[in-house]
Each structure stands twice: as structure tokens, then as C-alpha cells.
Length: 53
Image (cartoon, rainbow, N blue to C red; front, side, top):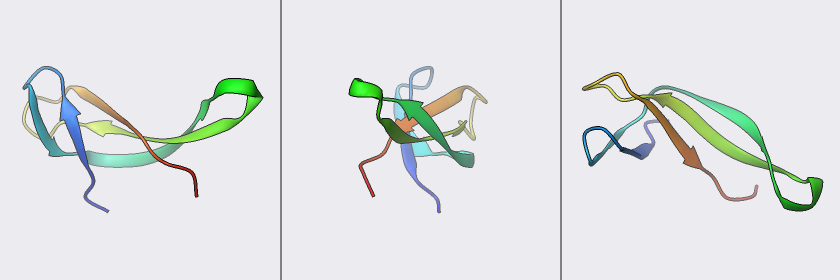
């Protein structure tokens, strides 16, 4: 997939390494989609909220 996310530690946009789609609780009991993975440079956990399908 090679999706970009923002690394808070590096303060830069980087490709999310080892990304995995996870469900997230949304408003009104709905579930939202999100991606989680790590920063390739510093190893910090990255997170990105995705739109609806």
C-alpha cells in the first residue's frame, strides 16, 4: 500500500512501515477505518484515520 502518515517525533510525513488496517470507535456507535504502523526512520508508532469505504 505505501501510505503516508505524519510522524510526531520526526515532525515529517513518511511512509508507514508494516501498516495494518484496524477498526476504530466512531461517533454514534459506528466504526471507522484507520491505519497503524511504525515510522521507518525512528520506529515511533504512526496512526492515520481513513475515509469511509
